[in-house]
Image (cartoon, rainbow, N blue to C red; front, side, top):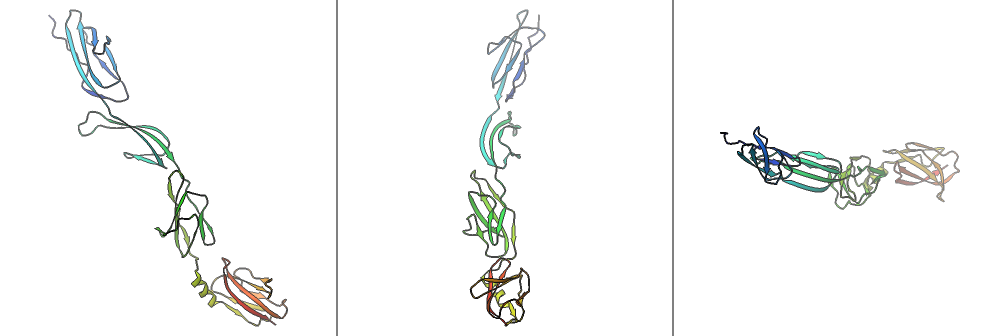
Length: 275
């Protein structure tokens, strides 16, 4: 007399993407019948559900076992991002499909499965271009916001910004994909406004006047001086930073001397008499 047939196909579990094998083989088993109609001793399981098997021995003894398999939840996330996308502590930087498995916690049986379908957009880092006191970017963007000292400059949303004071300038740009980036700092230290120009002009000295063979230019900043005839034609042009103009080749008479800074702004115009 045989004892009751013992069959063990495993404990309750969870299934994700990989198949599970339920093995009902016993030394005495000669036939197998699963609830899905299979008669194999091993059942390949692809989906969650309840599975049971009846095993029969040669002398007609029966053994049964049942297992409950839960289907792991699969969440599909399709998203777009700029430069990078962070999900549960991991950062993705490329377009593509990734599978993320989060281990079960809090007494749950199944892991959580996420399928990330990501489209990654990029933006070219903005670089500030400088033309005198006009700031722009080396390539076009959809929108601009200029900053001074890290703070928004109200109304400064054009592609070109004319500085109004010394300081640290940046620009926040957006491209046609909605991606944003901020430029590196461009430091302005040589700005002079109208008040400063007038102050510099008051400090410029032109002597002697009348001039006898030469004229000296004293200025608090590097300047370029020119001597023109009354008709406006330039006769002598001084290099930037020079301090003296030779006038010995000029005929006696009345001339105009113009003084400009290194940015080309007119600081002073004065009559000059040559003897």
